[in-house]
Image (spheres, rainbow, N blue to C red):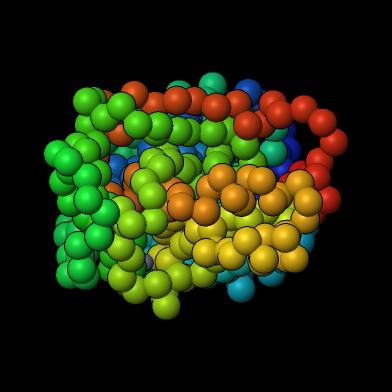
Amino acid sequence: MAENQSTKKYRGNCHCTAYVFEVELPDTIKTGLEANCSYSYKRGGIYLSPDNDDDITFVKGDPTTLSNYTFGGVKHQFCSTCSTLLFRIDTKTYVNIRVLQKIKIRNINTKPLDENATPPPWSPPKFTGPEPPAEIEGANIHTGGCHCGAVTLAIKSKPIDSTYDGLVMECDCSICTRNAYCWIYPSKPQVTIVGASGMGYYSFGGGVWRKSFCRTCGMSVHNRIEDYTSEQIEKELPVEQRQWARDHLDWSPVNLRVIDGVDLGALNITRVNGSERSGPPKPGGYVDP
Ligand SMILES: [Zn+2]
Ligand SMILES: [Zn+2]
């Protein structure tokens, strides 16, 4: 951060609110920093560092209990419950500004954290599982995985490029902003995941979706809805969730940041303003802590 810039206190937190901290950063944040490494791309981190590491103070949660993933000599810290990436630590600590409250991440420009940095070498983990069973004309197999390789997956889909005419969505709600999801919506038979035993799941607000992530590297993988039977939907789900569940039982949304070789900039992305949904928060829904 530049010297003599006036600062103010921001509050940040992971989505499940197990970790809440305050940090001194510039009064007005217009630009964040993007690291040019494979991990930062996959996690969508946008960073700023306070002048001193002491300018980060924890309000809730013990930072020594955060999960750590080290790559290329850089430590990345995330919440093991909700997978939100909070910090990037090299010679100093950077805050992932996606986790700051009242930040409109879409209004933030980005520039390289260090344009002279050589990205640490990384080879995408190889998917060796079975081909997804869906039969789709003109489809290709797109493979990818988390960063550490514990989880790999394949999607059978039409080319995921500028010609793709299915829904690709980015939302700015509390969870999508924090985890930098870019969603694509294949059906369950279009997706095969290997290494699911290494995944954690996070859900909130009584919703039927469980957001999966690699427990080792924190990478957000997909959004799972159980294979509910009609009886289970009637018995186990709150009334307001039932129709939604019936309509989406077949979905298997995937975070495109896990798929190798996708150029997000080339896609026709629908941007949804989830943060502006009106009405009172749902019971168990997200509220800034
Ligand atoms: Zn959390
Ligand atoms: Zn991983």
